[in-house]
Image (cartoon, rainbow, N blue to C red; front, side, top):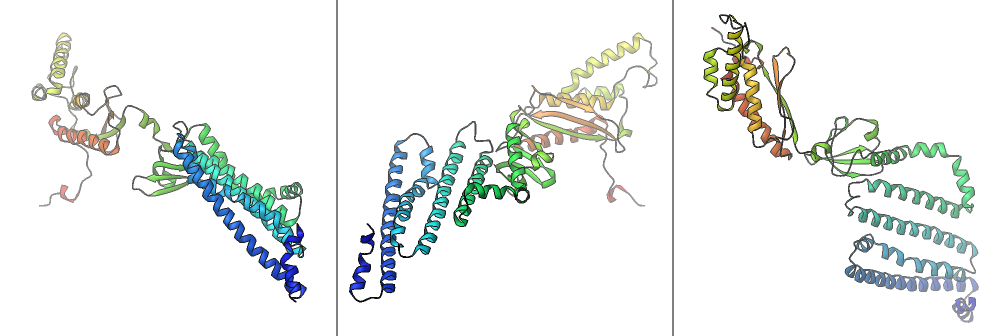
Length: 415
């Protein structure tokens, strides 16, 4: 076998070339021929494998093989045979140059390790893409787990490569590396924290891809589009992207709106602040005027009869309104809000509907609306809420109430 690789060398010697020139020309010619043959072989294998996979994927019903082709797995696998052939042939070509032979063989071993990592990476990317098509897994942080496996693969691959280059046994190299564990932990601190955080986020189901989250510390307010080992990408509603460290999801507080999205309505919680000095007992004349408002007409009639009967039975002196039982304009206004919300077509009637009075503030008395819109889409939700408060703001004067508003320059009149 070795004589075949020295055929040109023998010819060159017979033609009068020196041994040195004959050796170099022989090696150069064999290398050129080897490169040409390996390139042709690699090209043929790639074409064959890609074509075979293409036909198989078109006939197959599963999408896994489609992702294999998309992530160039067949192309990477096609490189294996040329590398093996080169590793077997190089010792014969460089039989006269042992030092160069040793360097090239080590280089081929390192390249073989890198090729194996390429294949592993393409397989992991294929698994990642495939898992994202499975309904039960598409909202899980698949990227984080794939990145963890990829990091371990690259770490082991690099250790094997250094072991080959230094001529040290892998286990001895690994033992020596253990002494530098403190430095490794320091360098990969964020990766380790991110890995632990990814596991906790997944196990506790804290965040899924597609969730709307708000993290005020990082200015994030939008949908989660990616959960990786080190970062979480949030697409804000202004279409900007905020990148948040994964471990921030367990070390800092954040708001996940998934509960709202999965519920039957989106909460409306906003208050009107009523000036305290505008709150009064209602006179019979005022009650008669308010009965013209259809939503509370029946309520006022019934309440007025009950109150009149109570005051008469107990001989209450009604020359002063504070005596006995009375209706107040803010109380009737709250009843009107409640009736208005219960008749509003965009409010979910199966969820809490309430108009409540909060504790007095220096600005006035807050009357809070607490209800849920049936439509949870942001634009429609804002429209519904604005529609409700447009009406209530315009309704306030009918009850002889006033809203608090800080005075402006136009509030003062000068003589």
